[in-house]
Length: 464
Image (cartoon, rainbow, N blue to C red; front, side):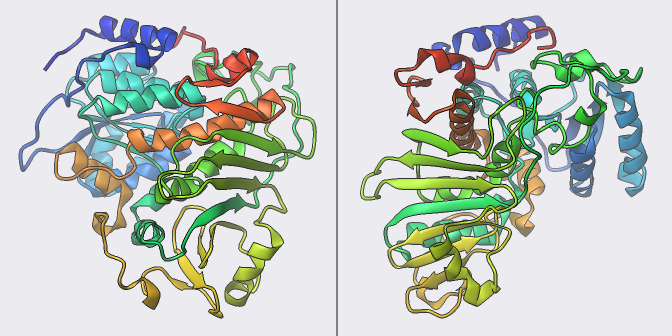
């Protein structure tokens, strides 16, 4: 195995960021150790906020050992440890995890760590995942995976060249109904599909400007490090919290499209083998400022693929979000009203509907009165099972098993990054203010070099 010093890894990351990963031939990234039958995984958790705390029980229940934790806010560390202590002996051991305030120091010092869980916020996901992979660690990263199309491409290529187990927190992909929906669609039950709508009725206030009047910075928080690769903004207490609080600010996140779109766009991309979009556009109800708008209607156009036709894929969010009326009406006999979130495939022979996570898929063929589950619709019985099923439909367990070589992940970075690219091209169209023609191979907007900073977002290097 070819190993690199921590300093070399850091300089390597800077080179990757400057030149683009396609310009580099990477050394093969291998796990730091092989596993025996009785070996326990040692896990490090990068960030200790709400999502980290939610992921912890599934890690402990699987028998892994949390050896180290890192956060730039000591208050969050205290919360995390308090919650860990409620999970029996494994939780008590996690309470004693070594604490760091700098992920780079953790990766450089904790040689026994086998795998890393990244849940630090969208702006940090690719930088921390890259650094962890270059240190030979398996990585579970919460969604959204990337904060730009260039980041999505970089982490995809890194994953393709590695032997490490990666997984993105798109938990719906671990369910039997998600995978059966893929099989049913690819088996041709709906015929040709030319239109897909995904939506959720969550909304933010109308887009607004950054407040330049700073609140006092808590002494327990390293605000500069918290901002990390993003611009250092005046501190506001409301930035802290979950993906809804910081995620509406375009400096730190990309709103509902990136957050829920990581789920909603996942099943269409996978089931229809979409590849990259050729065009992206969006309609919003107010002028765009520094935060995500109150409602959106994104549209991507995908070319024909082999014997599959061209497809229009939509993402809708906001209080009134939903599919077009004529498609929504197809759901009324089953649900009485259009569900508040979902993914709806409109095929020539009928529809397939799931929730926004791709879970609970149902089919309604033309002439049928109501929807029936993809697991027992009689017309789907002849369609073979071709995809592996996750043990216990447990997304975290699937990754942990992959870390020890027992299986492979279904939602690895090599696929999830391509889904992220769709969302990030939508964000380019949103911030550019007009539809874009997307050159995925060249990683640029066709005929618009002025859009390059939106594709390759500038990053502060201080904390990378």
